[in-house]
Length: 140
Image (tube, rainbow, N blue to C red; front, top):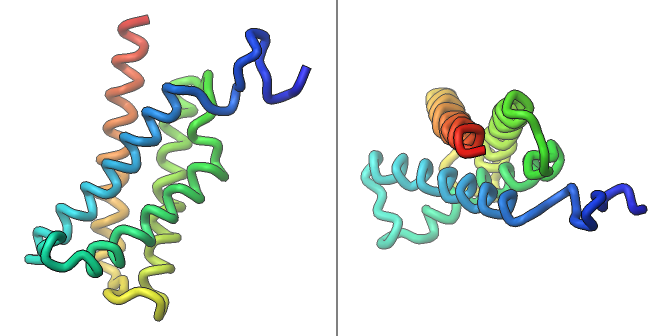
């Protein structure tokens, strides 16, 4: 038996629920950044390049960190999901801030922005995962 295949023949690495969680996580990261842009008077529709330059570094950071942390593997305990979500966002925020500070992206990453994006993202993503985990345990 392959190590990545469970007893029922399905992969322990990724399933439909994991895909749904990934879509919600990514949507929340994008929405968080769009709300931040709107609060600074930037219209994402009128200035799509600014939106891409804001969203891409953090989205890339999230995807890389989530894959490396194994955030979307199946059958994790609620405490492990919350720990991995926290670790993933802290890593993703740092990757995003490093990319955003590079000459490849316009906008920079001043320390107030770093604090706000890290704290807000942590509250949003860990809060969402905590609510989902509570709901999942309630219905099972």
